[in-house]
Image (cartoon, rainbow, N blue to C red; front, side):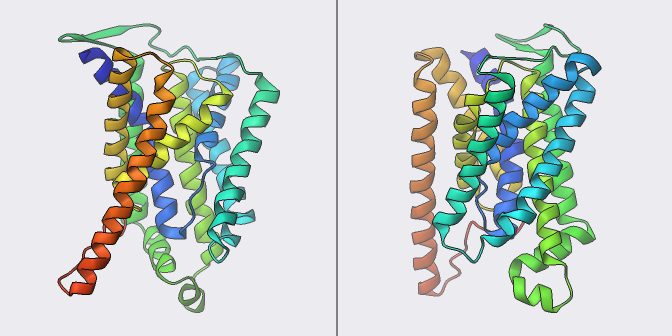
Length: 298
């Protein structure tokens, strides 16, 4: 049981990186990118394809580059047009992009499960009653470091300052001379690169297939909702907790219940977010600082 919890938490950390990118983009643009799960799988396939001839490290670099290009093109060509549109167009558009990416992955690589051999091979480490892969620990550490790097870029750079200013009021940002569409496109590139890196790291720890994208999206969205828009570390922590829960359920119950659990978690996250928003609105109406959980980037 301890091993299932620990391994689930380590896998959750990889999705935590994708969730950090998801929630950061949500905070600054107001768009929910439902293609994030497909971008994770795209990164996994890019890593696998390049690793066949050049090794896993170059494969992960290729995944990050692919994610950055896809994210920039997606944000500049589609998502920048959506903030002023009805919410259903935002959801349908990004979900449609995810379906296209999943279909392309299935067409190019079939539906077979694939995995990448890490430089650590099948080395296992023992921590008390738990046994974990060395590759999983290294992948988790990389995801943690990448989340910290994303946090630093968004919070402690001139780009991050300009992006936060543009996110407060798009029109005012344009009037102030900020290149708002380009800023948002770079933010989309960083978000997608984080997802693709998470996919590359995921490919080193176990098998994956094109159909995994939707399940991953559910967990990413649940972590982002629980953590709050823009709160990278809360989203990362929530993803780790969700991964541990999935690991425990996989240990105690049939594997086919995992997808049902993911959906149940997302529904609970929606309910908690709705209750929190209602409570915040009532607190604000009462005057005494109804603090919203959708605060600025941490």
